[in-house]
Length: 357
Image (cartoon, rainbow, N blue to C red):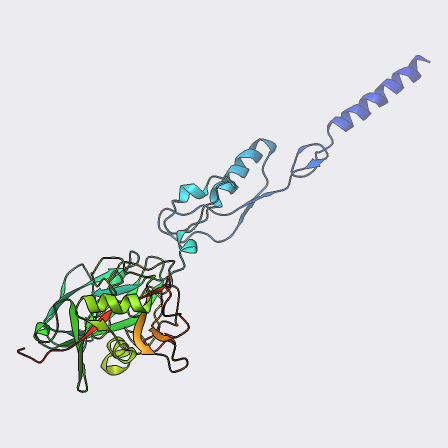
């Protein structure tokens, strides 16, 4: 009896010892709960050497699992221009890092002031742009480009200036040019000081440089009838322009489609806006002659009756939201002449005086 009891106790001890020495599951921290191996990307090498592109695999113990997770998060850094690396190390999904170039998709627009065309004396031109950018330029006949540094570009004789621009995001403005024709002449011999002398193929007359009231920097006057426009010009010793005079001053000797050239440029004149701007504020909206805002800003009355309906007068050009339909040949005739219209203004003309009179 006692011997049998001692044998049972001995067998129980042997079973307990064997259970205590059973190995744990591979890679585990607790019996029966497997912990997967941690995969981390290599740290950036600050010595300048190329980093090892192989992934490092290791089997941590339970005590090292938290540290391994920190290493994995620390190496998952997204690099962006103009964003500090440390900002991407914080796992804050409520404030994601954004690339400023992803928001700004518009290329720069650079232009010369004064613009090209006919000038009566030498000019000093400077570049302006719609946003910070680098401007490269060269003169006609010169193959090498130079970076603009704010200097005045002296144009003493007829010349062509080529230029291009690129912003910090790599967005480029297509190469453009301005052709300057320097032809000395004293306009006051033919026209009042506030008017430009237009002469093409034997046709000569004077035209206001700006829309009425013909003052640079002043808001042009809309909401006038054709009869009010006629009376206003008459009071100044002038007359309302004919449609042919208006178009000739706009298109110039080369019959440009727009006052600045053959191709529509959305940012050259006030054609994509919510209202007219002060006269002359769009500096590139200059014609071959020294006349401004003939594409966009305000459409303009003329004293020419429409061929489609003799009861109406022709309105030339576009206004602030006409887009591409703001060329020198774009005209409308459906405005009642006795009524005042919000996007319609005018400018005046005058017969040119003979030289010396």
